[in-house]
Image (cartoon, rainbow, N blue to C red; front, side, top):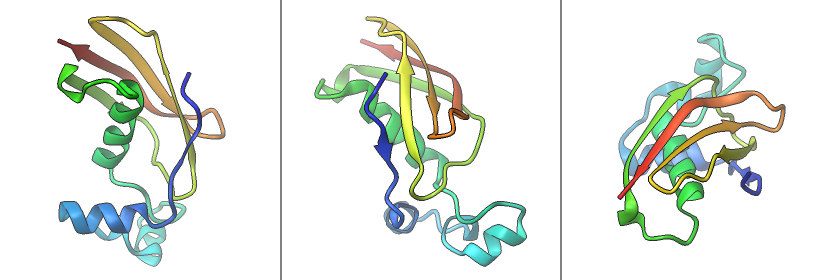
Length: 113
């Protein structure tokens, strides 16, 4: 299990600017709430990138051949995520949970070279 990863309250804005993903559910609280969410949510690919970084730790990023995830629940600014994996050498299965133990990524799989 990883150390908790605190999601910065501005990360969805920074990631949106860098990636071009400016969907209003990521940057406008009123729009996100009108869409049925509790507020703005982090982009899924940002969550996946944070997860990949946690799985790799200080390892060489080139060792990650592929990563698959199933997004199960939204990630909100200031959530704390924990990555739980089986630590496989060539293939690792993992889930990501928030501070309420709710799975935000389920059925994750990382393949390594």
